[in-house]
Image (cartoon, rainbow, N blue to C red):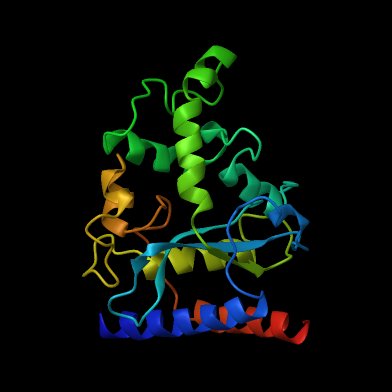
Length: 234
């Protein structure tokens, strides 16, 4: 645990540098699409009410993600982020196109705030079903759009072996409390405790994949190098 704690402290010190490079954490509110987004990257979501308790002070990371890991994928960073955000005008969204939205929705349902028997059923749904889910989709958008996030530019080619995937899974492995002695545990009122996925509840992250994996400490050197590249190109 002591080694992991040291690595967590280093990880967050690197993210502090990243935050300075990009001019501060942002939220998925209207206007974000006007930013000069890199084509590809990794993103790190926070929750203002979720604070670090072991590795230092400040908000803890609650979700790590990337995109375009399948060879030939053309999905861009902002495209993926906007899928998590939902629609600006209606406030709704499509949880069938975003696992992040799906699991936040299940937590809201289990928390007793909504009912939705069709939530998560299938990869597509008819218009009537989607209309019945609008109120919950709007609530999900509200939760996610309140989360500040950072992004790291990694413009490599889409591939399961991409550097983006390496950073994503190792960051999740480091942050996750799944099967480990907890560090930076969620607050008692964290919404994720109401999620129907054990991996979310026990990891303390809005992630399911990679939460039970080990991390390679060498990824921190790579993260350092990537942030240094962004600092030089400012």
